[in-house]
Length: 346
Length: 240
Image: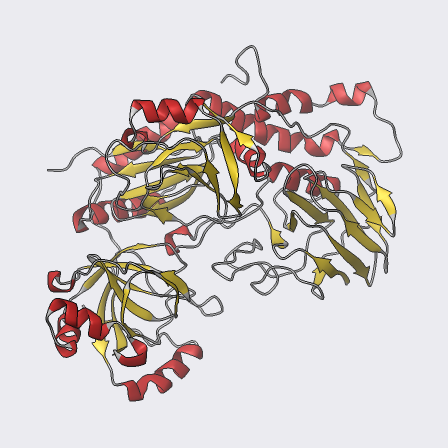
């Protein structure tokens, strides 16, 4: 058995997978990785299924060592750098962390959330079907906790047979407005308020965490009060409390709430939104259900195509290899770069 | 008269089926009945259903389940609703009122022109319905508070109230599963743990269950708490 030992890390470093489905009826948030794109790429680079639990770093990096064997690892997201015993690891590349070696994860440079995947995943018992740590439920992670110095993470040790791999394509980072679908309670707002919401520039406030991102900017005016009898909440809901300042509800959100929700960030754009740092400007654009659903299908195809898009590290990227995968088309569809014609029509 | 529910879009991967906009046991029963129908025969691509006071939020995978097909399915299922097969359970929950266990009992009594004993009698003689479990794992929102005890929330919420607290706010009552912030009034405390991650079952109560509070003497607290910490439910299922 090989262990990954945490030598140092930031206070919100935790294990996260695709999330915990099925327990919202008992008040348990789904949680899960804030950026599924980066989780999926990190996992693909070490040969794991996309939803496998990885270590999520939040702003701050950390140091870890392998003990008892070698581990194939990959770090993806937020422009974080990785060094193994002071030798830099190329971006979007997996690397072998040999027994006794130290992996140094740098601080976030271009976003907030980065993922360290280990080939085979962690040999830790899930709680309520998931390894995702949720602070308020004291669930998941390692013994219901975030990670801290001294923690020992047993690994399933599947590195044999997996060579270091490289993803030759960037994970797209487009700059357009964050796409939303109006609803579920857009009828609680005046037309002017909806126009303001869709045209104004907002700023991510420092109150931004795994539960929600508070925005600052123009106030959004309610048409008929700001209290509703609590109803269900989903990831990406944009609720507007009495202050008129929107809050985007993220993966550790509550399961039900009593403020009207003006709109919902489409599933594919949630990761891009999550990586916006406090102080960043943000705008919203309303899209149709068809566009949002097509993007969601494209994202799923993109994830499915990831393993075939990888190159063994020692080979250079060839055009043939690029063309042989559907990765580019899938990424454009999934990540909403401007497309001139409808994509993925059914 | 039963109306067709409204379908409120929640992004590309969820829809809320809204039966009404008020707190009403009838609306809650319909949400729970649709929940049960969907769980017994889930269409492919259905991920999770979350019942609330008056609606059911349905999460789905849009790559597998087409929205229009889902809405047709939900419309039909809502029209065909039968009373739930599963009978909600009724639980007897022991409570130590007042003193260190319920520090707002006296102030609530005073504000209502009642004695603390009268508040305990009124509060303990009602049958409460669990409309919703949310906010925190296992946190039960209870309806059925006697109008004589309706009390607006505290102007200054407490940053922490301990697990097991029985409290009231507005027309609602609640059982606190674990330490949390709250602006409600603390009447008493139960050793019952509605959420215990290491216990089987992890959650004691479900939406649609009923709660009856049984006053117990403070001298019994330690023994009941020991039993609860050892994994016993302590709450007792009553025969209906």
